[in-house]
Image (cartoon, rainbow, N blue to C red; front, side, top):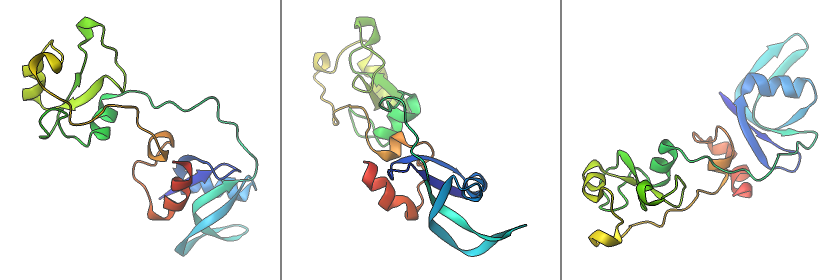
Amino acid sequence: MRTLVLNAGYEPLAVISFKRALVLVMNEKATIVERVEGDPVWGARGAYDRPAVILLTRYVRVPGARRVPVTRRGVLRRDGHHCAYCGKAAATIDHVMPRSRGGADSWENLVAACVRCNNTKGDRTPQEIGWHLRITPRAPRGAQWTVRGTERSDPRWEPYLVLAA
């Protein structure tokens, strides 16, 4: 079971194990905001509720703006595993502006592509072969991308993740 950690200003920070969350609560470094109904955790000092969401008692400074690193898996996830050219199931990624022509490995230059479209396009731009992109590639935003561990979201976290988006 996983627990969402909120900064003192209710900004989502990460998702951790409920055991780690319980240790933070027991050491009074966090308070429980949402509990899991059901069986409590029994300890030497009594019973504790299983935390679904905790709030840190002190503000933790997050260094700089969180930039989502560009990964193959991230590009496929952003594009919904659909080819940006034909809309079929995508298994590869493609550089819109080919690397051989100075195209960067950036969110704005990478799209998901099926093998057929990727091979057909080759070392050309979409304009050169008369194709158009079905999506506008851009860096993903929102808590699902910047808060570690929220890929598999819990319904109890939704109100807290919406505030961060």
